[in-house]
Length: 251
Ligand code: SAM
Image (tube, rainbow, N blue to C red; front, top):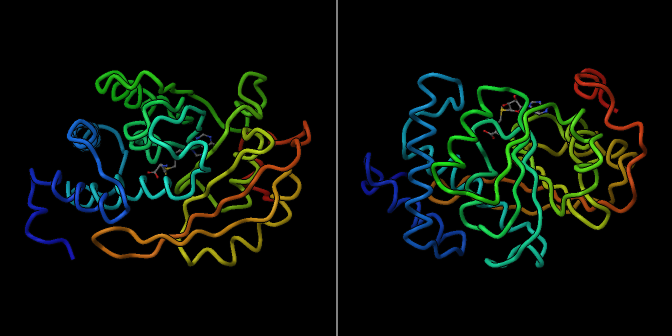
């Protein structure tokens, strides 16, 4: 349960405590930046639809700390605080999980891929306000951006949260991953059927066997599941198919 320390204005204590549960010791700068991000998210949410969650405490746990669970699944070369490397967040929306990850891993080059122009304006604003120099906002559909030679098969890690079923995500995300890199889908343990249904799409996109990493959402102690897929072979040039086709007609 959320305790008294989670009263409005005190989400910093909640973030620090939750991060410790994840094995992270956040610096005061990082905590300040996460709080500033939360504040911007809630302010802009009054004008554009970024999140259905509107209490600061819930945002801290269900968005910020949830985003940081991805650190558990990063390959060793990227997990270190000073590690450089590239990560794309497909369907970033209000910057989740990409912005919290960029805050705690400032040496990573983070691309936030988002189809909605207004949400991209928010992401650009936040990256500027927090001086996140490693963050690039890419406006467009993943189906199209994944065919750009400067983006295709260029990322060490591609991550997605709440964008679609795994079979659809595999087609949107795996073409962006370099061979030897990883696609991480943020799911819950309820995703078993979805994972089974995605095997063909994963195989077609050049992905290997999936690894499941169970994580617990701090404070609330809810179960989450990180599905990690290694890119083993190049994706055939045909994929992803045209915008909307992966979701309408999953492989
Ligand atoms: N990842 C964020 C989160 O967890 O809060 C946002 C989730 S929101 C439900 C899904 C987002 O994905 C929306 O902002 C939508 O515009 C974006 N999106 C959906 N399909 C996309 C695509 N094919 N390419 C790029 N963005 C996409």
